[in-house]
Image 1: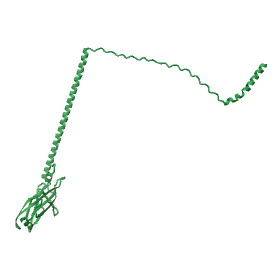
Image 2 (image 1 turned 60 degrees about the vertical axis):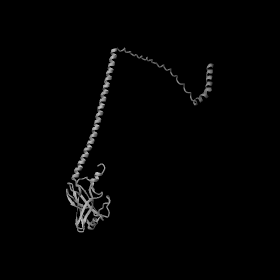
Image 3 (image 1 turned 90 degrees about the horizontal axis):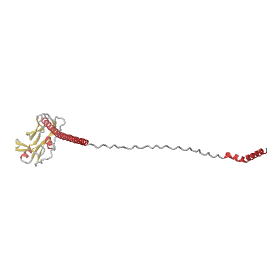
Image 4 (image 1 turned 180 degrees about the vertical axis):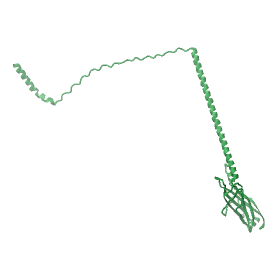
Length: 284
């Protein structure tokens, strides 16, 4: 009985002594639990693969017949290749020859076509020159007209077609000395608008020179000149305008007023037509 009382008393004292530590335990965190121990990994198996050994079969040595056959085959191939090269060279040569022949043929054909075109243009020009109106000075008619001498240019149309917009101007001059060949041509009166049919002749642009100037020319105190110009178009479309110029010097003899003689000679550089100028241009 006494032992039981002693044991109970010892437990009571132990509880009283442990009461403060139990009261502070909730304020302190409990330490983390230790990590679980990892189980050991089993070892990885390693597979060893054996490499196959390369085996090269040795060819049996060729016989003489095989070597001769291979050599003959190589010779045939070489001969065939040479023949192909020869044929290719021949084809290239033929093509080059044909190209040169074609170029020469084209060149000479171009020359021939240009010559034919030039000839056709020349034929057309000649036909046009024959058919178109061509006005020229057919002569100078003169006569006594009271106290003057009348000089009338005779204009002629050598073409087979009439003129269009024919305009004629004339003038004359008395000079105390001989005029230079390139003296200035001028006209006092305005040109006359006229018409000249195919193969026709007519007097246009009459001038009158006083008898006193004729007497002075007989006495060689004056030099007399007469000139004129005709401008016109033909009947063909696209053609250029045409003209004809003349300049003559009067040579007078005899006695005035009823016994005189006149002779006309070309003078200076103002004689000709548009055809003369066209022929004088380079390249025509």
